[in-house]
Image (cartoon, rainbow, N blue to C red):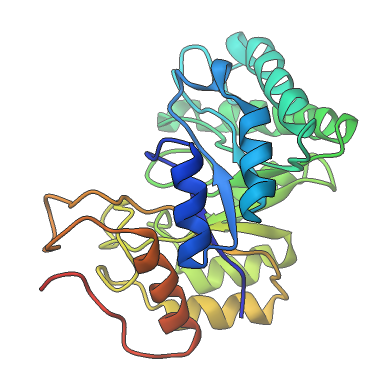
Length: 272
């Protein structure tokens, strides 16, 4: 149905990682590292391993913290945010990365929301122009709670700053809008995903099947709007404190989960 992708979030980016992706049948990856690791990320090494194992870098998640220094929705740090983002985009584009995922904000107080939305929209217009300079597309991620972009209305407003802006659908971030409604309202602006499950109370990044989301509805809606990007997982491999899982996840679990979802089969849960 879709290519299967997996974020590197929480996983050391090394040869063993690429080998495990390849052996499990993971088709593509997204680069996501801790905020402290971005300045020293060895992109040449990543490019070499990507070519060696045939696992392309689909996307690159731009950093979103610390919020007092990196925040598209705050004018006082916007210039520094854009300068840093351009530095990262420039470096990653040299190894062929052409899609960059960005968060609109951190938690936002109600009285500051209108101004923050306006600022973030302006920032994304500027970031879109930076992206074009390097042949890259900027994908604004839907966020949970009081963060900006927590519904289709706000996402559509934010990306209206430039026709080239697109959307990253995180399946465990929507808390105030049904995910199928979101998909239909945003439509073909969705170019990538972060796939995980949750309890409808807050983001959890569980494996699909461990929470409450009906992924058959999600897949159907994505097909209806013509989505053709990867089904890219952003899940925690460690055992969560809040659900039963008998061991850590591995890449083979991700590949099997995707296959079961695509084929409409019962999901295998790691709880025995």
